[in-house]
Amino acid sequence: RGITLIELLAVLAVSSVMLAIAIGLIQTLLRASGVARSDLEEQNSVARLADAFRRDIHAATAFRAGPAKDGNPVEWTFDLGSGRAATYRVESGSLARTVLAGETLESQESFALPGETAVSVEMMPVGKANMVVLSTVSRAPSTGGKLPTAPGRAVRVEARLAADHRFEKSKEAR
Image (cartoon, rainbow, N blue to C red):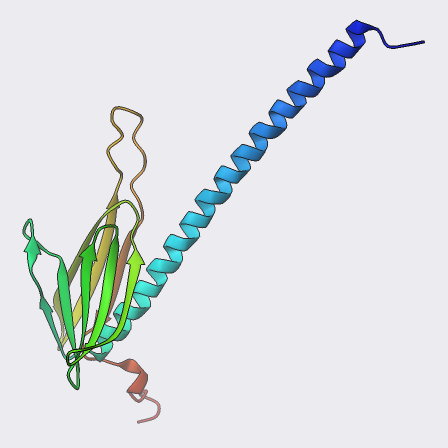
């Protein structure tokens, strides 16, 4: 009418196996949640960067590349008129945007970039207008002999220089 020692050991063994499976599953779910959160933060940062870059290009009257590192510029300045300028600078793991009104700091923000990311800004003539293109390409970090990981997402933002479409009249309104 009681429980034998063998039955008790069997119940303990089954319980410990089920507990180990549950702990493994919880750990996997927490890791997946962290990766998803990181991806979401990266997407939000890229969306904010694209929006700020488009606004600055549309409002800019001139564009110039700054100092270069290894033959590639690491700073770009857009003249926004009225003594204002927006400067984008590559920093470790991020792209910093600074807006100056004369010598006064108007705003400053930083956009996180994933891993080893190469950033380039180019101006291309398109008809009568100039198109400014921001490109980011993240490369997979060195794996040290382990299996390689896939490269990150590439981002390309295009905007016409000095063409603030918010203030242009549509063809129907003309």
